[in-house]
Image 1 (tube, helix red, strand yellow):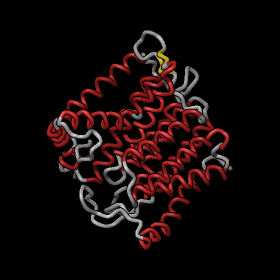
Image 2 (image 1 turned 90 degrees about the vertical axis):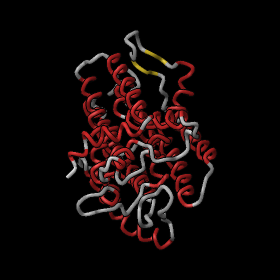
Image 3 (image 1 turned 90 degrees about the horizontal axis):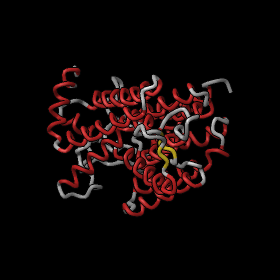
Image 4 (image 1 turned 60 degrees about the vertical axis):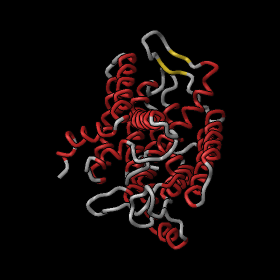
Length: 355
């Protein structure tokens, strides 16, 4: 097919499927009802992720954009997470069972998809760091943590889809720059299906509230795909990226998850217990509306990833990127340990930008 035509078709396929399937979900009672920590006012179908990844997998294979021989393990992992997420959205799956299913999906992509984070680059300026015999435990742990970190981002309209689109866009630019056109086509397909979903999920002048949610099926699947490309694009000196650059690109959900774990443990709480102390909640508490908060956070993620990739392309030593990343991590943890600090900062620097 002509360049970009599969991606354009995928974008419109998502939109065309959402319209009838959203109505069918409401009739069938497959909805996310308001109440508790949930702030939406009406029942909203949480089927966005199912539509996104169904189109990605089926159309990707039919159009030839996705090479099944290379990506079959990712497909299997996605199916496992989508099924588990869809069941959990409507019924209930205990946290331990969900964790085991995520680990199972991680094992499939790690062992059969050749997703192995053995190479970490010259992180400290002392030579290349290899994970050695710890490569698989390290990879599995990283995949499961990233799946959950992305899942935790799904807290306000458009945020998870918007941030993941930023990730995949920077990955695609890096792949194109390195001549990895096959990977760039797949990443373009992911961006297209996510943008189709955001038509219904992100607030804009024509849409005051989201009419479709990602659901656990989509948020966990996105985490797996982000993990897949994070490893594949940074697997040695001939790859498009170095691991520390990938850490800059996808660092935001990692920072926020670490900060929440630290804050909850410090208070004697369950680190996995849900609450409203995430970064996006600080924006809301600072009085910044959701339709501003989501683009602001996307811009922060884009600046962070763009800085890391730009510095790498300009030849900045990896050790400086490592030190900078660690400083930002601890700064975020320190600010998040007392949310009032972040609220003050956001009111001072972001609230004046809101009309």
